[in-house]
Every structure is written in C-alpha cells, then in structure tokens.
Image (cartoon, rainbow, N blue to C red; front, side, top):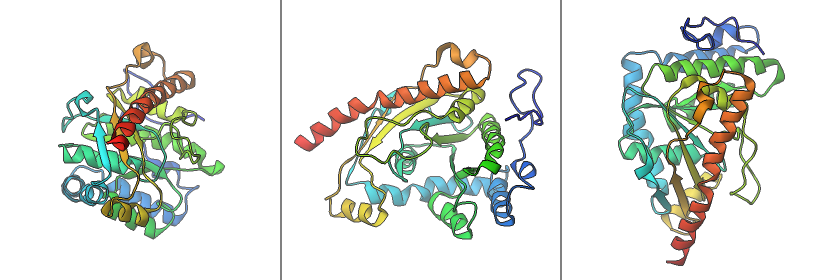
Length: 291
C-alpha cells in the first residue's frame, strides 16, 4: 500500500514535511460519525490553549483515578533505567498486551513521577471512532489520548498507513509520549510470558520517528474493571507487577532504509526487549508472593 501522495522532506523521502491528513484520505471511506469524531480529536493536538489544557488534565487528573484504583496491588521496578523525560522531546513506550488497561497503569505511574509530555495511544477505531459514547470515554478516561484510530476493515486498511505517518509527524514535533503494543492485539490465553507476533506497523513508527523506545512488561491486570477496582480496595486481587527496561538498542536498523523488511525487524526487536523483562517480572512476583 503506497503513501506516495504524502508530502515529504528533501532529507528523508519517507518522512512527511507536513501533517498527513487522515480525514482527507478517508473522505470516501469513513462514515459521517467517524469523520466527525476524528476531526475533533485530531483538532485537540493543534498547538494552543486546548492542547495545553489537555496536557495539564492528563497529568493532574487522568492518572489520579488509575493510581487510586491500583495502588494497593501495583509494584513497579526498573525506573532507574529510564532516560530523562523532557517536555520538548518525544518518547515511545512499547508494552505487552494482556488487558485493556496496561498502558493506562504504566503511564499513570510515570505521570506521578513527572512525565511532562502529552500522552498518545493508538486505538482500534471500532467504538472509539464509530460511537459518540466512544468519544466520551476517550475524553473521560484519557483526555483524548486515544489517537490515531486503527481500522480492521479491509476497505479502510490503507488509512492505517496514513494514520501511522500522522503519528510519526506528531512525534517529530516533540513533547509526545506514545504508548504502543507491538503485538497489536491482546493475548488472551493463560500464559503471560509468551507474546504474539510483532506487527510491522510498530516498526514503521519507530524507524521513522527516530526517538528513544522504552520497553515495559506488565502483568496482573484483568479486563473486568469493577472487579479490578474492588480487588484493589479489599486487597484480594492479583498483584500488578510493572518492570521497565532500558531504551532499546536497535543498532544499524534505525539507519537502514525504511522498508517493510526493516520495519518488521525493528518491531521484532522491540518485542524481544519487552519479552526479556518477563523473567524479571516472574522473580519479583515470586518474592512478593513469598513475603
């Protein structure tokens, strides 16, 4: 699928010089509801008062409920490995995917420790961009962090390349903290220590964004939010263990041509870095459960 229609820089033909317009590319493929929600969320990233307000709300309120709903179960390790998180720089975080709340819990921990950037989580388009309730949830739960939408329908698949390129463009502007699941979807079996195959689109974003990539492994969350909250306050729930790793070393891959082969290799390397934290999580969990 080609994105040759995008305006590109002279120094690197793969990188857009202006913000890719997902709305324009999707004009004939997207419903009125999808276009309306996308237009609004996309607008919130425009520099100005509303963007600044959202950044403050993400820091002041967005992480607060997550912290209180998980604080009695949550245990965090590896924070000393993190690079400085600077307000004008962008960072990508790659995380395994076991529950709907993985990135929320991980990011809330970093916000409590001074994360200054605006938070972005690519999200499936269904519900969040097809239903007004999805827009409401996006606003209440994350202050519009859930962008860009990722489409599963075949007729809209080409839009995902434009969305990923728009994400790269936002990252390159600085001041963004992007959370991504290299697996692309949740792993639903009983083994949290083996991961699904890496998705090439993640490698595309990492290669073209050229910013630090932090791996993290999280285990212990469940998808039943009311039960998760109750088990935190009565302290009967499974311990939530979060392990951060040092920034991923991609070696020469980041200087390789931006091709599907390179993107796949980068995505696999990112996922390997996440998986490598699994044995650490097991050791920490065993010690916690024995104490």
